[in-house]
Length: 167
Image (cartoon, rainbow, N blue to C red; front, top):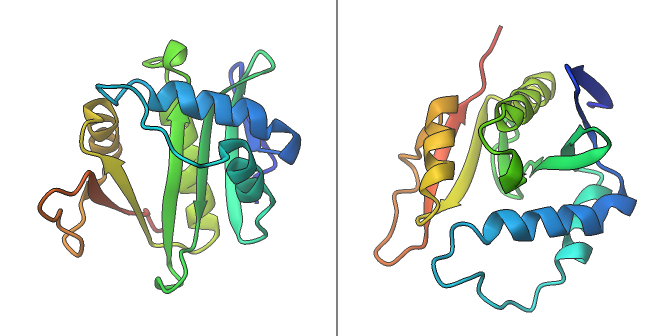
């Protein structure tokens, strides 16, 4: 499990439950950028959801910290019913004020390193259809449309797949 990595002034480490509120706030700011009419109202306690993700024994939440401030977050785990060598990236966000600074690339590389260490061979995710910036980012990292999950009529998400590099 990743405990801490230092890349220049950026530290990528495992999140702790006390950081759930800060992470939920970052998540909201990032999501706000790709909903044309604002983030839809939902009855989701995002702080509680993030705390639950951090505390899950079968999950991983990594955070990118720069100068003592969380500027990126990634959450992943093996999904129930999925093959054991497949991991799902549930959340991946970089603070909008830090886009195009290499944080996303470094955070993604830390995820891939963890997936490789955990013997995962495939990663999957879904991305909102209006989030063109994220789609371009994932394409640059090597993600492709998931042939096993083509988008359905009226679906609001695209499904992507990534082959975790082997040795």
